[in-house]
Image (tube, rainbow, N blue to C red; front, side, top):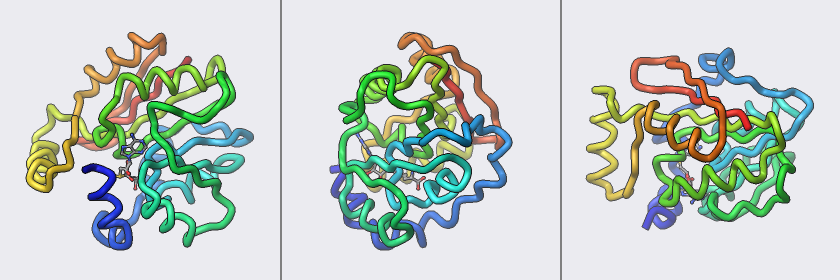
Length: 188
Ligand SMILES: C[S@@+](CC[C@H](N)C(=O)[O-])C[C@H]1O[C@@H](n2cnc3c(N)ncnc32)[C@H](O)[C@@H]1O
């Protein structure tokens, strides 16, 4: 179902969601310039361009082939993988940084995804997650909307996600760049 909705709207996704204001959150992102980054659930690559410009290159992994086709039109220098966040096709300890923007709440198997991220990250590697906090008022409007369009989303609060990451073995901190969003940084 999730896959279908994103595939159906892929060609209009960027117009619908709008441009991503990277500069607004850049100070919260502990990006390592000399390392590759995995944009997990990266979709149309809306965010990946900026990630690629601020690191040593970006790999986008997404469930939806049609979302990835949009990313392909943006840049040929990004690596695209159609796959599942809970079955990451990388060797253990092979990545230094993983970013999820607005995608975790769309992922059905969140715990297994966090576990897989932990496995493929090298020690001191970072998992950075930008999400909408389900406890905040403005997020409730988004929750309602996503319920109506039957996205099957599972929103978490910053504290709930912190606990889930700690259970996997991460050390966690989070910041609140806006009232309704948080950026969680989980270090292995
Ligand atoms: C709201 S979009 C966000 C896209 C992008 N991160 C952005 O900010 O523009 C959520 C994306 O998560 C992807 N997705 C959902 N479940 C997934 C899974 N299990 N594995 C990989 N990608 C998934 C969807 O296909 C969709 O492209």
